Image (cartoon, rainbow, N blue to C red; front, side, top):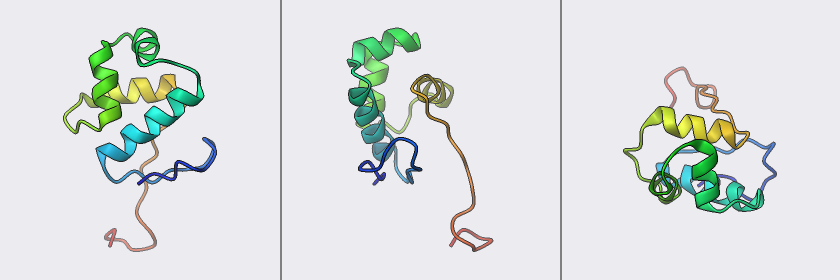
Length: 87
């Protein structure tokens, strides 16, 4: 699960689409936005935001990245721990 108790400036480790959905839901609420508000700002349908927050794993990646960017989030990919193979 993401570290949702930490401030938004803290990194959250996302391992599953549901983790990302929970984080998006929490941050949207903190920003005082309804799902329909976020959908309008992002230029998506409300269903897309609902699916994103539910952790639907088959959403279009670019749209997800666009919504995260709009919310002031960025995606950083790095190797896990110190192991070359990510184990």
